[in-house]
Every structure is written in C-alpha cells, then in structure tokens.
Image (tube, rainbow, N blue to C red; front, top):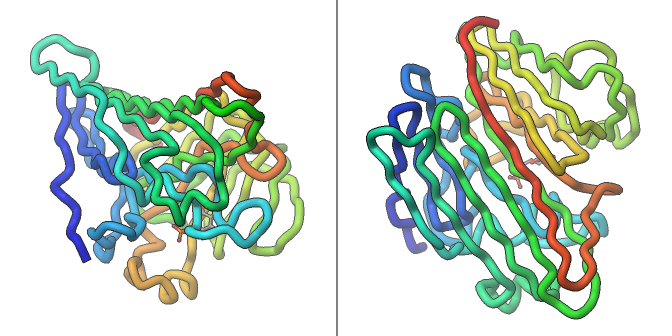
Length: 284
Ligand SMILES: O=P(O)(O)OC[C@H]1O[C@@H](O)[C@H](O)[C@@H](O)[C@@H]1O
C-alpha cells in the first residue's frame, strides 16, 4: 500500500486547516482560538485506494451504492482519486481566508472506476480556510449529452458527546430513513439515540448544539436539496475496521448533498455549484 503524502497546511489570522490532493479531502479546520471542528478517526487509513474516515470526503458522482444500489466504490470515485491542485494562496497578514483550489476531470479517473460514469466532466473544488470553512464544488458537463450525478460533502463534525447534541433546523422536514428503509417526517430537533442514517429533504441551515463542548457548529449551504445526518452508533462502529468501537460518541456527520431524487441533471455545457459553509460559536 502506498502511503499518502502529508497534507497541505493553509492558514491566515482567523483560521487554519489542512487538505490533501488525494480526494481534495479537507482533513482539519479550526478558527483561531477554537478547538478542531472536524473529526478524524484514530483508526483512519492513510493509503491510496482507501477512503479516509473523517474530515470532509467528497462523494461524487454517486452517493453510497448509488441509486441503482450496486455501484462501487461506495460514495463514488472522487474521494479515492488524486485531484489536481490548481492554485494555492497563503496570506499571513490581512487575508480573510487562505484558499486552495482543486480540479478533477474524467481523464483523471482510473479506467476501471469510470465504468459506471462514462461521461466527460470537469469538477472544480474551492476551499477557503478562515473564521469560516467554505467548500464549493462546481461540476460542469463537458460532454455532448446530458448526465445525472449525486454529490455530498460528507462532513465529520467533532462533538463532545453525541448523545447530548441537538441538531436544529430540520424540524418538519421529510427524510428517508436508511436504517428503517422508509420515509419519515422530523419533529423537533434531531437527537442521536440509536444508529442514525437519514437523508433529509431540506435546503436550510443546520445548527449542531454541543453542550459538552459549549459550542454550536453552523452548517450553512447553497445549491443543496439534501442534508444527510449519520452516526453509526454501537454495532456498526464495531463492524468498521477504520473506526474505533467507542468513537461514535465523539462525532456526527452532517452532510451537504444532492442525492436520490435530488440527483443533479446537467445538459451538455451546463454547470452546477453546491456550497457548504461551516462556522462555530461559543455556547450551546
Ligand atoms: O463507510 P462509508 O462508505 O464512508 O460510508 C459511511 C456512511 O456514509 C453516510 O453518508 C451514509 O448515509 C451511510 O449509509 C454510510 O454508512
């Protein structure tokens, strides 16, 4: 197994973080004066061909096993492929953010992996590290016919105690419960009290209130019809070889996405942008 090169570090006065060209994967981020906001497993793998358990994997061009239910690798090829670093700007003195930009096209994808998505595309991913973490994924159809894709910024948030968090902003939203395999409607805030794997139909901002860390993480977004909430709880944690048995207590995934019925359709030449903006404040 080839070990991954060290991630790139970006920083400015208001915040800092790290990102890998492998998967254009944001590994860490914290605004200045705050604890790390993103979670990474103590058991995360660090080799080419494997997904990284933590940070912000990019799911593209399908989510999970895709809508057909049989696509591999899980969550698409973008998170296990090297992206091209387009430019990187470091500003030490007066910049509001340090920016990294990555590009991925069909030509970068291993031939075997492309089989399920034989389309020509160009994806540009821009990440601004500062007091906020802004991640923006633009996909352009560079082919001559239309195609559809799913996408998610699979964001692992670090929390003090997942059983005590309250995820607000989804009250009243319909969701597909992937554990029960049925549609439900959210009533009140989301609490983690069992295996949780839900695709919400919601374009709104979500707040993760975390009394154990006395902070609130805000997940704002644009161009996204779904929010996925995932916590593997006890048994699934034990079944994953890149996840320690008790780590479900210190994380929750809140994912900005367009999946299932909200897959994006692009005609030839069209583009679509999905943006996620994380921020953190004191108090819960
Ligand atoms: O183990 P993976 O492929 O990184 O996926 C983790 C989880 O990712 C979530 O987004 C999915 O909704 C879950 O179904 C899945 O188990």
